[in-house]
Picture 1 (cartoon, rainbow, N blue to C red):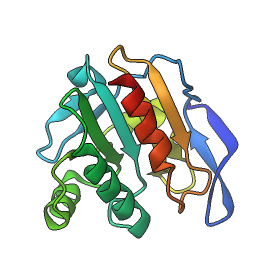
Picture 2 (cartoon, rainbow, N blue to C red):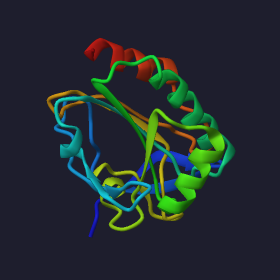
Picture 3 (cartoon, one colour):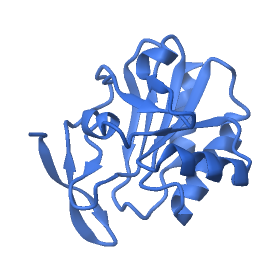
Picture 4 (tube, rainbow, N blue to C red):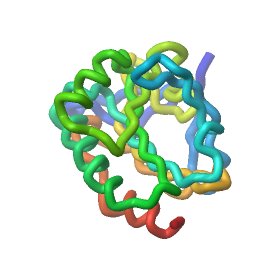
Length: 172
């Protein structure tokens, strides 16, 4: 049974429960297994030695998630190849691929946690009541340590883009 944590996030003002551990800055980033738009598995180890900017969204097809992914795609265009940018959601890979094509997303790689929920559970971001991922941003350094974390208090709000980007730039 996954650890349950309360008092961290709300959805439209209603308190929600997060499942999984509280991963903090300085912790070793937990491994995960998600799939890309072609259903190929992707793990944290696949990007070892690179800085990872991981945006986590409830659903790519909602306005705030759309805005967030577009913003990070724009920001990622100015980053060197030593940085990989992911957006993780529970959307099916087919929906992610369709959305990326329509939105012109080329720098952010969308990843789906629908098969195992390993990202959500390992990073403590699976919302018990909604069965969606909480909105969050992680920056993981090239050695696999969490260098930045923001779990957005209100799921319908946007993250602090500038702070996340500043954390990436400190590592490159």
